[in-house]
Image 1: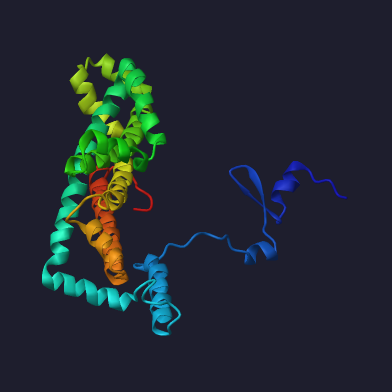
Image 2: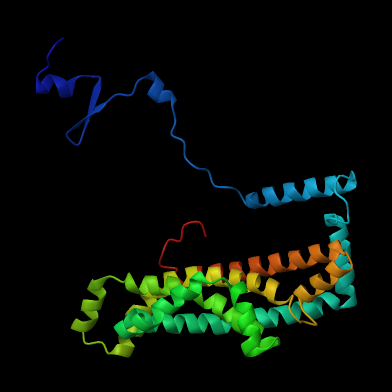
Amino acid sequence: MTILSPHEFYSDPAWHGFSGKAVPKPGAAERTARPLTPRRLGPGGHLFGPVLVLAIWELASLTGLLSPRLLAAPSTAVVTGYDLMIDGVLQQHFLASAERAYLGLAIGVALGLILALIAGLTRLGEATIDGLVQIKRAIPTLALIPLAILWLGIGETMKIALIVTSVLVPVYINTHAALRGIDLRYVELARTVGLSRAQFIRRVALPGALPGFFTGLRLAVTMCWTALVVLEQINTTEGIGYLMNRARDYGQTDVIVVGLVVYAVLGLVSDSAVRWWERRALAYRKVIGS
């Protein structure tokens, strides 16, 4: 074995010096190997899975493997949805569901944001509020329905109240976490320049909490529709859930599929609207995957 001097070592053709460091020259195997990097899907690439499922579903229905009593074919659901729109029935129930969902969402988001600010900016608020919200997070919305009926009846107030309690939890938790994660240097800077409490909230706390708030909001818009699916099965005379409940009694699986599609579309559209708002509000950040 030949021992090279430092000068001979760095000048050896098998090594290439870079910034004073010896870097081995790759062999033939290393030159041919390429790193595996994830490739982004093209436009519409995420639709491959749903389209494949729909194709299999339609094929199973056409060949008789899937009975229409169990689940109607997608083509049948499309025709049924079109007929319901022509008759004006679908629009009526859609508007009733949207009113419940978005009213509960608006109240829940506002309440969750206010509670997060109180708990995130004051010790008393955190000691009082945080534990209660964590308890609510551990209790499913379905478990609160019996008490909500006893306290608020079986009308619209009960349904909206339960949507509010479902929505405020993700908004509170993510906003509160973002507030607690604000860099202390910004807090010290605010004290140094003499910002008032209101100015600190407006210029430091709220901008710092925005990323967490939008994360909670995206979860909230999904949860409001998830809660509504269950709540509209209880003493309602209009709404997508009522339409599906009545269709169940008559074995109309095509109407049930139409209702599920409406819920899915509303949830996706709401989430897309929040993501668009997030990109505009957080334009200074590089949002990965948006």
